Image 1 (cartoon, one colour):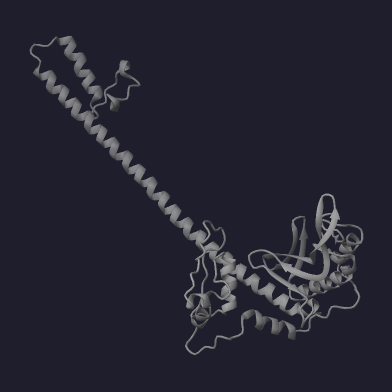
Image 2 (tube, one colour; image 1 turned 90 degrees about the vertical axis):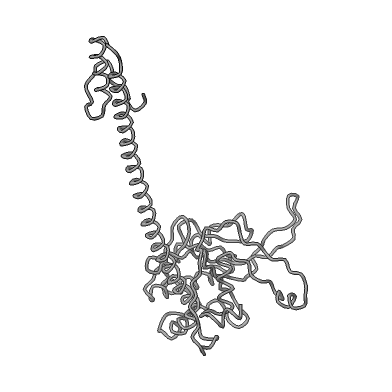
Length: 333
């Protein structure tokens, strides 16, 4: 990973994440130490099937360019943090977004039966699942996020399938959760259940998955610039992926069309050739019959007239009409 980072414009961490997104096996912790010590290492196999992006484009690093060069995401996060946006999550809701108002009503009314102690929102609302004690914090964070997105020219959308941060034409699926811990219980049908533990997380789903939660040095509410930067960078990556897919599809369609046109032309040429070959065979058969008729000594006149008419019916250069031979395929004789 480190050697690749020295050669290409990507950090070792960024390259590791890219491999994970592409479902490419990566060395485990202490892998190279074990190799150097002579221990036998099992090589993981590549997955048999993969339906996602099949390639990763890397730009070579210029000679002398430092490996620790700040990523686009870090630069963008710094620029976003410098803007006059409503990043500060308030202690109480002020003029909440309509999505927040609707979510608040659901959270205080609905419970998640699958996760005891959790409040949930209804369908087509903000996708939030937290303990009642965390409702206020979740709503204040989401309200601030929605307003920051709007200030950056983006918007937050909901439908029956989930929640999306919409950046230009890219829809990034997101949700807000309180994490759970396994707790022992004494019930006839199970001996444990998952209970909320007070740790909140804002999650980006999909190929560019990301989680933001409380850190020792920074609470979730103070990570909004990083979250916005990540979402905008991911949107650009998704746009690039879509553009590559579009170019690939257009090239594939051109190649498919060219192959189809060539196959159609081949069928046409083969059909014309077979027709010519069958015509030549019929002509040759007609000439053979005429030679035969000339060789017959003193033929019956009526029969000879009949035979010559049949030969003229077969001859492709004459194609005489014959009511008794109508519908007969001359090429199958």
